[in-house]
Image 1 (tube, rainbow, N blue to C red):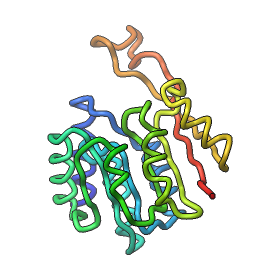
Image 2: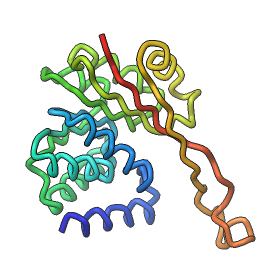
Image 3: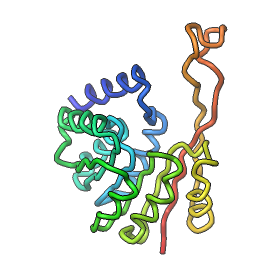
Image 4: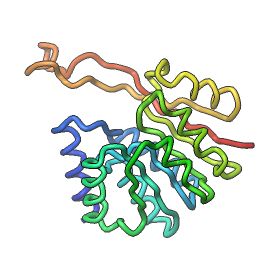
Amino acid sequence: MFEKVLEEVEQQCRKERVPMLGPDKAKLLAGCVEKAKPSLIVECGTAIGYSGLWILRVLKSLGSGRLITVEINPDSAQRARENFKNAGVADLVDSRIGDASEILKTIQEPVDFLFLDNNKDGYYACFKAIESQLTNPATLVADNVGRADQMAEYLEHVRSNYESETHWFERRRPPRRPGGDGEGNRGPRRRDGMEVSIYRR
């Protein structure tokens, strides 16, 4: 059932152009979760639950850990909740609605994994909102770092202060018109990436 729901959510994201990691970046995220074996993950930017499902599959396999995921769009958050329920992992996730930089200030538990995939210019604000609750060490993963200008403050901070590595991915843009670029392709490639950092006090 889980794999069926994950496949359906991926198809919905592609059809509706809902932002999602895609399988390659999702595998990197899942690998980071498996390595960290976190007790509590906080995700900023649920959308309809694609990345959350990848995270929750690992937590279920590990037999421990919970996810708090935050989404500003109530309709998307509700769809994500339904997807988590249908996949049989609703008991592992706390889905919250609102501005992540404000919601994170209300979390009073130790957080050992932070995943940033919301508005890019809000990454640093989200990090600062939860920093006091981060464990030592904690894993930080940020998506879309190919748009570095939009999250410059966050990237400068983690790259200057912590062990941090950028993982690059080649992606194709969706076609602008039927037939893509006229040669059967989906359009020009663009480079995007994820930043994986180990926070330490």
